[in-house]
Image 1 (cartoon, rainbow, N blue to C red):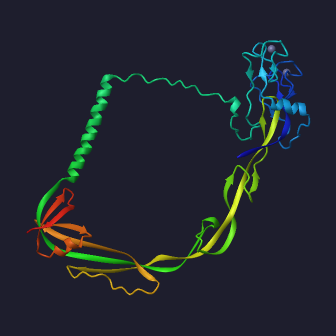
Image 2: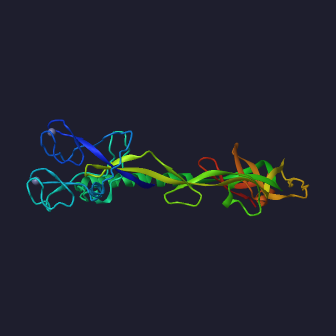
Image 3: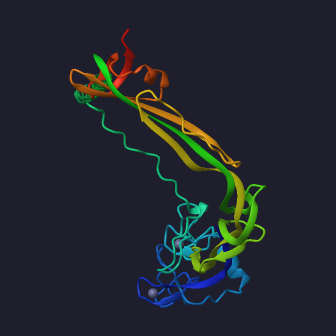
Length: 338
Ligand SMILES: [Zn+2]
Ligand SMILES: [Zn+2]
């Protein structure tokens, strides 16, 4: 976001002691003579309109930096003053600069702090009290117990029991995905559309905001607002971005798309792929096969799902197999008995 300076305006302040209204650049109350407080809040003369200052000297003053408050008498002095105008005290040491950089007025949005008024946050972090030896031991014990629990669970889940089982039945499924070379419609930014596509229609669409000017972009600015310069003069600014518009287009392109999946299923060993009858613009996209074998061991049914046709071929009903079964009943390994 780029900030544009539109000009400078006179601000006003209210005296803490007597309530009188004073022009921003006046450093002591015109009614009672009290010095302006360091935390005084400047206000806009008129929040609705900006009466820009023409006086070059005043503008230079606003640009010179926030005023300093005398450490001896509290009077406000210009940023470049070396001695206090009121009491002639030395301002080169101990003089506080007025806060600056914040937006003036209640509704104004907060403004990021300017680099010259940035106060680094202290790097000091209070250290934690030393942990007692016993607490550390207890924590280590708890950690070990948790580790042990997870290890035991993992071992348990992986533990298998060997069972002698008989094949009861089996089923198979084979799939062929069919793709067709055809026209596909899509839309994208013109610069991202493949070169062999046919672009049908485009419209100009906002793509991103840039802080610097980009060819063809449109400048968009927020409402002007006033920033306190710390001198009693307000800097009227506007936050702007360059909205970059680009062509967004509908296009057609030839591409392979999935159009169908042929499936054959069956039981036992009469396994076959689906019949292929491809049209000229079609091809096979992919093949998959899955086999399910149902075993019986001691009256209990165990199921093995696999894509291995070799295993399936051997799983004839009535054949004897050795199974490795997990505690949850999953078949982890299956081998035909000799
Ligand atoms: Zn006063
Ligand atoms: Zn002074």
